[in-house]
Length: 253
Image (cartoon, rainbow, N blue to C red; front, side):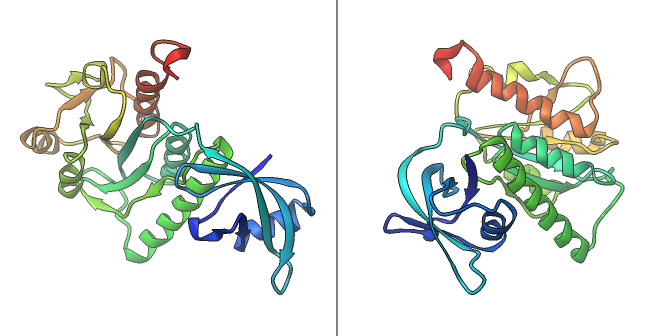
């Protein structure tokens, strides 16, 4: 069944109106007809099974759906995870965002750190954020998320550290000395807010690692192998998914 995201204000009196690109996709690309089933999510972890009631608007691409059943979504993880990602080169951030969404992240924040290669100006930054939001939405639809994860605005390193430390569990992933094993930092976590930071291609400088430690942010080691920046966040998210959703067998799901 096709699934689309709508705003809560698009749902009223048992009807849902889908407009814009999603409305055109339903009416033109998919060529769906009255009576066809559609699932929508209100981006607040609530899903609605619907059937197409009508096509309205000047070009008949506003789609009116009638709700036949509703439920809480069961695809969201029990914890809210924010990935702070130092901006990598080229289009690597595209794949980082896509896979972070698939693996359950609630938010991805691009970070300006000492060793990043590209520092976007305001115009290019806005374009990048728009593209990453689109990628996040497409990934959320593809993997059946109950919300579209947020793509935060660019943050400076110090600002990101301050925001991270407001979470219930937080750490900075580092390949240098004085690290604690990741399993030690996430053992027993079952919910709440979790935040972690991943470096760009050159990782974090020793000064940045010291700045994190001075704020009380643990340095997390990810094992004996050094992971690429486009792999590291997915590795951490997979470990969190195991700890919070899969550990203990079917009864813990």
